[in-house]
Image (cartoon, rainbow, N blue to C red; front, side, top):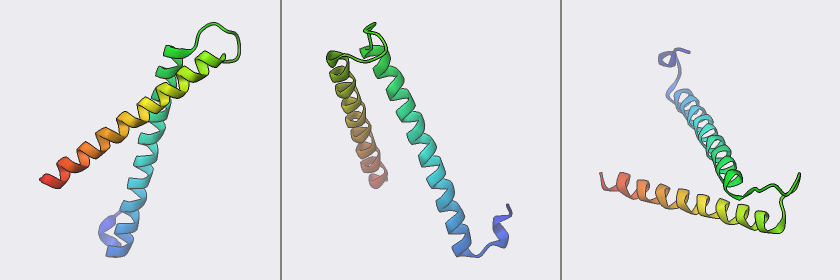
Length: 83
């Protein structure tokens, strides 16, 4: 796609869509990584379902993962605001 032939509004729309797609890909990778790590940490050999302890472990692991992600995001935003 030749962006030079687009109007500024069209270029902005294309860039916004590309950013949204990139953000979705990042979030998908984040969630996939979180599930893999938390499952490996929490899941035992209780069969085809998680028992109550494993479910609690998964919930806590996911909460910590998202809390950490939020703190990192806030720190990056502060750093970008300082430059």
